[in-house]
Length: 374
Image 1 (cartoon, rainbow, N blue to C red):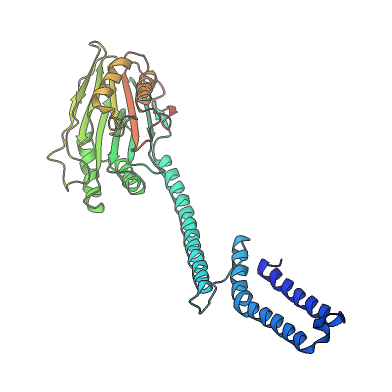
Image 2: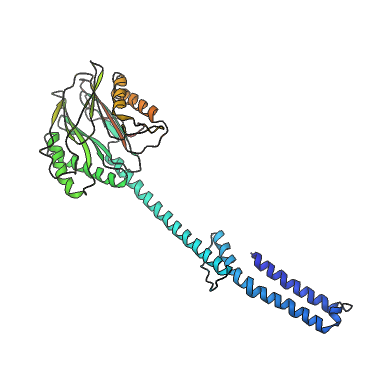
């Protein structure tokens, strides 16, 4: 394919040849009979042609050729011109643009690689968190989580030890890949230390002893751990700097907020003197609600926060709807109505547990998925 500069050059060649041939063969013309003027015309035209080639086409042609290669997606080269005029400036501009394009191309490839790794990390995280909610003796449970990014810092789990069910909810500072790594580490440690622990205090204390030396001072995980004993029909908890525990008192029709207390995992070497296991006094049909700060701190279009009080109101309105799943959906519906289409800025997890007192034959069997809309 000929470049425009090449076409112009060839047209000039043809024009010069036509003029010379015409001047020679037209015997009646003064140009043809006067050798001086004929020579002068030939010299002028050749001079113009050579000047154009040396001054324009020879310099501008290579630049255009590389630009065309770039536009066609073909291999291109840098243009080296030792000139300080417009052509030199144009060559520098071409080299600058292509250098930036190469940088952007590298960034895109690197971004694709990182996205692939984040997708893998997200899949690993999903395999660690419960894909479905276990059926717990005398307790009806519903729980879901929704990370703000591919990898989140929220974590929860349900673990059986004998007849008892241990469960926890944790929230790592920040979100994204670093928070996700801490979350997966804590989750693994909790599974390991469950067999060595008799209560929630010992469970969190042992986990913290291993976690603290392995994280920097700015990364920690707020946690609340609960222990449900179906034989005693009692629930116990130990707080590690997490949010409030909400209890809908079915008989009174009110929502109570209990500070979980304690200090977050990873903040200090030993939490044994701070952590305490306490009992939650529950009556039949009472509902226990656990959450991460992504819910009360979520904002609507007017930049208003959902707040703990609005969450308590939502629990109060929906606490008598029936099953844990129905209560969960009622709270989630109120939350979505407030937030609207505003983007999610933090990880969100919500757990609802209703004390039914009804024995479950197949303890540990899973029910609905734990991933979904909140």
